[in-house]
Image (cartoon, rainbow, N blue to C red; front, side, top):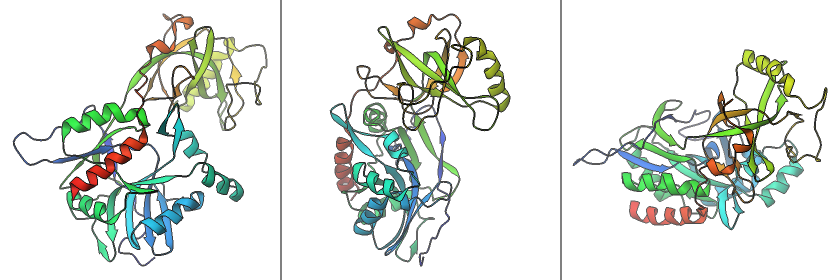
Length: 360
């Protein structure tokens, strides 16, 4: 590729914070705020027909998203390097939301499957930074200027978009609360005078953080050690114990301890449920070992996907916090969950058009 910035480039990262940073009083704004898009991070390198989607780990994701490669060739400048997020929006419960599961399923080894999913669950690219344009490397240019160049260079769809952004703290806080309903993941704050620093945590991310008490319904074995791979969680909806996700972040020693600790709860001597007969197993899941639903654990989670009526689930893996021997499993219901208000992703992208006009 004949570009002023060539792969590999490790994307700039963000460090976590509890609250949205405020602008200084009676002074020019220091921060630019934007939604935190929940997808696959990708730095797109385009040199005319040559297109690379560089993931955070350096892998080229282009082969998995052929429809997006075509869109990049049609909608982005001939020679550019753009940082952003690959997402899959899907209709759900009467609105359009980001669909993490559909996005995850796009990474598939079979070319025929890739082609099928490209038609059934097409992806979009949401740009939020510009590293190079034509022969110019602008990584050392302040973000405020890079943002203006990005808005001028990248169109508003139909497949490639520029993220909405604002310098108003109150608006950013409102986005944090409202946009979760469209499947977004929080808010990111960037210094307007900041340069692009690869692999450095120079941005700030504010994500949703919540806890819930769940029933332990089973576990999956670890792939490579004799221990627990993940704990499977459920919540009661009336008399129905409904799957809500899993918790999987444990040390190797703790995985072995859990295997022995949970042995007395196994249903039968050697019962392993597998196949499509059980609703606790999706097409992408492995077999699992059911347990008597007698133990309760508290987990941390970021957000839910779906509705209580249809059986909401944790959008990402939950994090184990502690056992709750004081809780009755039957008391672990959906009533305790903070399920976000619905918000249509189309409205977020329409807001993008308004912000692009204001940025000019």
